[in-house]
Length: 165
Image 1 (cartoon, helix red, strand yellow):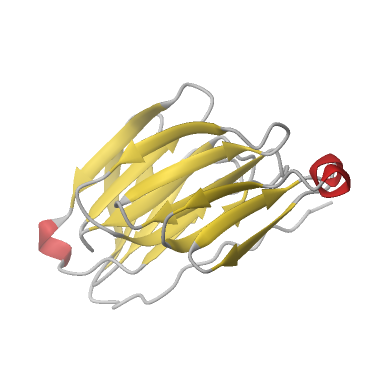
Image 2: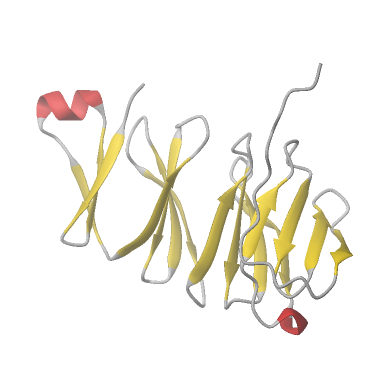
């Protein structure tokens, strides 16, 4: 499909090839903090200053949904299949949004962690790793959490996907 965005003077512009030819570019007038494409490039996620998390359909460039939040988002990750968006707000609250079903499927405040800094999905999207003082694993199917490591002081988490034969 091909699509790109630009941010100029606090305006988000989502531009498709057809829109480029017609010079019909949609603009959204708000201060944008962070923008990410979904893995299949079918939607775009924008963290804006309302604070909110806005999701745009890249085929139509229309706003699909807007999640109004109580505080800014410090971390944002998507599952490898694009089904889920995980984010940290207030530096202690982890939420997981299901894009297809347009709902928050997990939300937990980890006050004891003080400051969460890392998020990563497992390759199958069934688990979410959360890092702060400790490294936690959340099973998104059962909603259960377990401690993987204590006193680690995680700044960033990444999961490397390799194919094993």
